[in-house]
Image 1 (cartoon, rainbow, N blue to C red):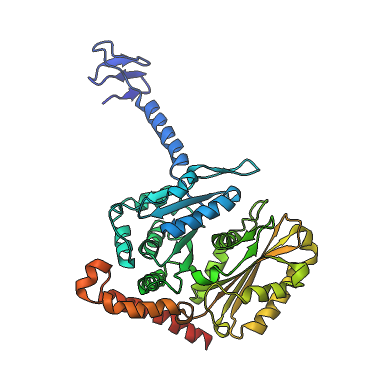
Image 2: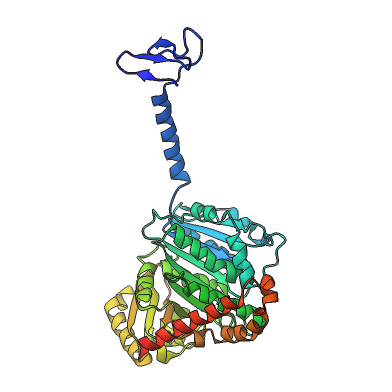
Length: 452
């Protein structure tokens, strides 16, 4: 080993020959003399630089699971990625049929010169020749993926982020979306126990087969049924059929529908106001409020681009949103009401926050007799029109109501899945099915106790 003596300024070569300080090679054997202190300093400096580039954390991580979930994240990244700093975007798929997303590798540059990170695409290991039609098979595929943790770490999910929000978007009718999504959140919680997780879950259409509703029910139970605490702090349920009937108006007057409406919902949650920097939106506040009460499922109600000149008041816009909830709900059982309201700057003087809160409190009292908590998140846009965007999130309705169609499909399909000879094909056992039913029934029972 080569050493350096600071007092005598002498060094030794690999053969332990003494040499004067500062020598580059041994005068006896000719071997090079290495200054290990200098080399160590160089190595540590290189590792520190690598740390800045690779080992980082993000305040927000957006993850799309399955074909539909990847499409939602892609749409959100294209619409809002340029104004969201300190964010990362990841798509996870089980097959290579995403050619329409290949241009997502290109970064999006905002008018302020900020370049948002490109979308990352991760294919689950061993999925090329796998048919992932059921929840259990998707879950098994995710568990067998040895690269999942590494991909999440490289997307910024790290315990060093004390305040991190992870947004997961997926359709729960397919095997990938329903099975991989809960497991992904499980790994997120393991990598960063401090993180808050918000799920936007697309529920199957009425005409989809029982297997799709079975998948959705299994996935919902996994989101809240863990040994210690729920995987998801908030699950926003959007029924596919209902979403297809909702329309909104964008900042430029264009019609918004389908995925664009869900993008608007997520953008409101993180304060990604168009043509300006993000507001002081804090999804962590909603997560804490709902988790403290044990309410995890919310029904979104959207009113995007409503003209105040036509509707007359924010109360009427609230009524417009409530008339078209994105999933079945029971007004009598609502216990949490969370309003995300965006108004143009030019109307800020006439829409004081104190007045809006008083108006909201009265409206809540008139509509939700069992309400136990409410909040208003107000942000401003630089638009010149009189249109406002309103997202109303209502929690407290039992899954037996909100996910009734999924539960009915689950009940019909479990008689087939429950046969032990079919366990290998569907990836779940009779014991799994019983556990899932108990989780959902327990959640609804707790809601009954709170409402009474």
